[in-house]
Amino acid sequence: MKGYSRLLGTVGAAVAVFSATPALASGTASGTTITNSVTVNYQVGGVSQTATGASNSFKVDRKVNVTVAEVGTTTTQVSPGQTQAVTTFTVTNNSNATLDFALTAAQQVGGAGAHSNTDSFDVTNVKIYVDTDNSGTFNAGDTEVTYLDELGADLSRTVFVVADVPLGLSTGAVAAVTLTAASRESGASGSVGAALSQTNTGALNEVDPNFVDTVFADVAGATDGARDAAHSAKDDYTVLAAALTVLKTSKIISDPLNGTTNPKAIPGATVEYCISVANAAGSATASSVAVSDPLPATVTYDSGYGIFVDGTVTSGVCNSDGSAGGSYNSGTTTVSGSLSNVVAGATRTLRFRAIIN
Amino acid sequence: MIRNWIAKVAVTLAFAGSAMSVSAQAAQPIELIGVVKVDKVIVENGKEKHQLEDPKVVVPGDKLLFTTKYRNASTETVRNFVVTNPVPNGVALASDGADAQTVSVDGGKTWGKLSTLTVSDGKGGTRPATAADVTHLRWVLGVVAPGASGALSYNAIVR
Image 1 (spheres, rainbow over the protein chains, first blue to last red):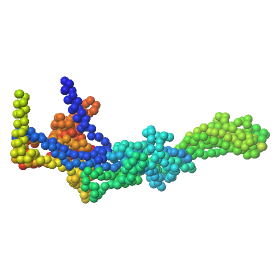
Image 2 (cartoon, rainbow over the protein chains, first blue to last red; image 1 turned 60 degrees about the horizontal axis):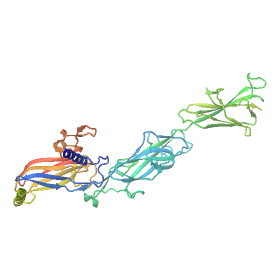
Image 3 (cartoon, chains in turn cyan, orange; image 1 turned 60 degrees about the vertical axis):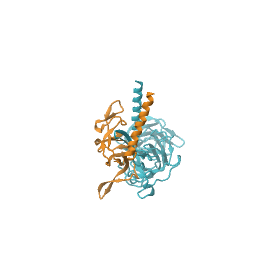
Image 4 (cartoon, each protein chain N blue to C red; image 1 turned 30 degrees about the horizontal axis):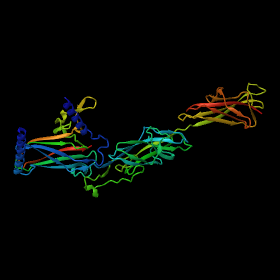
């Protein structure tokens, strides 16, 4: 019984060895020697004999294939003036050997972006980072790089193209960026390897089946050709700005002679000012909206009434609503106040009163 | 005493056997020549053409043709001629024409047509074996007459 179970174990081990051939997507490792051997059993004159034969061996050559892909299928939405806006890519080594990959991020002048849009501006301060902590998102722990070092067969890294967005851009402006990964010799760890060259027909080494040739097998990318040992993909930034319209209106509340009935703008009359801030439909939410209004010397701030913020507007007319807030600086005779976030299509107001001198 | 006698007989028999093959012809009656070629598809004038080349440039995915040529170089008839060919590491049997061969998917333990074999699916069950599961090929030829020769070949894909 003991012997039987040991026999089973041996068979199991043998099967494991046969199925141990790595099922890598990139295939058998470059430099692997392949030899076909046969065993022939036969009998001559009733005596069993064995012969073995083997084919000439050859080495699997190096197949260079790299893929750069945009992560996600949407543009990166940015605000004017945003710093460190991120587009994300993956670089995958589909080669059957470890290689380095030189990384470059290029901008384009006009032309189609990555998402049925058209490039219209350039971002600034473009840098490439590798996802050092493999979190999938750009963070402080990630390292700025110019190449991927010693990327093994079938392995991939997440790479971020990080850039700043200039001020003064309108909603819909697009900046397309292309990340290109060019295969390099793996070389020494910690430095980018030398450029690769294909060993083509006619080369001296090509006659030796045991020389490990280099064959480029990559497909064409966004801006590079097929079989050039490089691949590229495009992504883009699309600006979503707040489009604010500011309007100041006034109405006479009362005057010393007519009271509140048909009041006229005469000295001593009370005037209500309304500053409305409207954000156009389809815009980004405007936050930290600060309103300030220096009063002319011809009016005096009505401290008894106070200041109301976050009021509403109906058909272009300010409503008498809002909450008390804001402040008045008597030194500069300036009324100021902060409004809550103004979402797309919304309007908020700041109201106060003054007396005509 | 008896054990000694048996040993002597065995030695004599073995000697007789080897002496017979020496007198018959060479020490190895069977000559084997192994050949490997790459089956390259060349597009010429818009038409695909297969061309067998020496394996100078071979990358994963390429199709190979392994051939074993045999010849009975002796004057004796060779019987029970069985050629066993482990599929080399780094290649898989090509799926086209695979079912015409006698193969093993368990390291040479059991044999049969590929379509009749199963392998473990890794989940406690089994699944039909595919060409990539083949570990060995076998050809059973029976009799090879003196001077007779032939070639046994199979297609494989570099993994």
